[in-house]
Length: 143
Length: 438
Image (cartoon, rainbow over all chains, first blue to last red; front, side, top):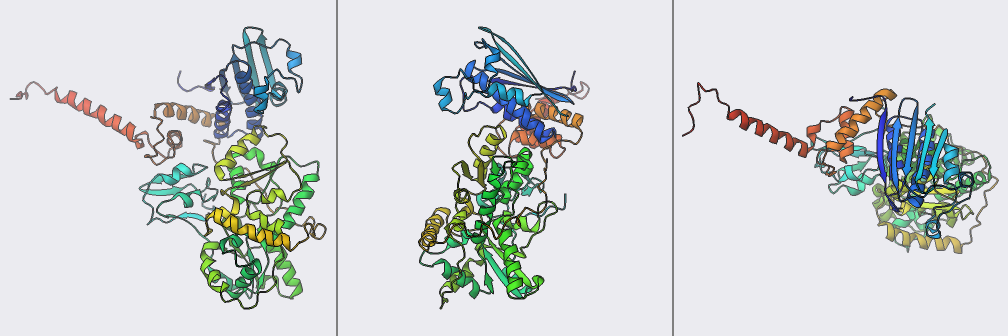
């Protein structure tokens, strides 16, 4: 096919690695700024993706991130094979967190992950199944 | 291009074309071409990291020569508070300020004094509900440029107040014009600077801004003059105006401590600043309402144009701080007098120098090619191609500024392929001419 109109990026999100957690989202941030996308759009994408990435690290032993960028939008898909979310409505509430104390001591797990994703994404889709895993799809429009 | 002024420049004769500076530059603004380091003007933020790291002293800062003071009738010096840390602690602040008059200035106005005015204005700003928090200090021009180039989404967080240097110049000029009845154009205001970024901030203001500073002289250029005058001082004049709160700005954290809040973060060293700005951009900092970010390790005392080692200077400054505290200078005396006059002139604009193409579709194609090229490069980031990393080389290639064979490993591979092909060809002599070997 050669060069297409959709730019695809793939990242592996390592398990329980808080030092490199966020590397994928900062790489996407760099990519978007090289494309000349508006700063506020980059910020929205980076924050939403960062939260999803961190969630995969904290709750799900890591996962994968697949990014698709086209002329109008960026779609960020974060997939994991973790425990899944039993009550999604509850998890969407600000301050709700199931993160263990050790994680909270590191400054993560404040219960803002999903609410922040919702705030910054133009569209947020979450498919989750207890015992199977979670897929988060974030769409951010360029205009 | 072409309109960019930078204080940081290259001394061609001294440059050996090594890779020290390209690796250290926080904005990947340097490439080595034809054995010389070339600065990409649009990207340079004048932080001076390259001046510090160059083993051949080939990176220099252009500042004004001392003689510039003679072009004005009435000469006013505005010393950065970091100047006080350059001399032995036996010399009081008044002693140093008096020495400044001996070397040829008619009047002294401390930038530390203006720093207190800026602190006061910032305190007021912090209380407003409509400001974007965390506020980021605009005191360090290298950090402001860094934000313009790499973190444009944080431009709205920048404190839109003039720096203490600009405030000092403006106040000094206005006060002297009025009290001495001198025409403003006859008054020359000269800043004694610890860094290159300040020079650039005067010579090339933010978009549409103007400066009240008429000349910027580096600490290291004026150091010996002051040193020899210190011994000539007979009567120490009482020239001190600033309290410890203003002097403390020379240290990292000094600006923050004046804000009467605990919700501040002070970071120094440009690479540390980058880490923190990433955190801010990812909305990761909680309970922080003010960020003091300084490009140099140790704050302005660690400026590339200072003379004394930053840690020695810090100890010396402490003596001046203690002396100012003992004098009991009133802390917030100018709260009312100077309100509202110091809004930043000019706009701090976004400078998206990282983008690959103005056309999004083209930029996407370039980026895809960039990734493909990057995958094929060895990933050693050796710098031998003149770019700071393999990815930067890949970027230069898609921008049309470099070739794949600039990579010595790629070149070696190509040579080898060629050699193999030659061997193959050598074995295929036309039978008519083949006389065989031996």
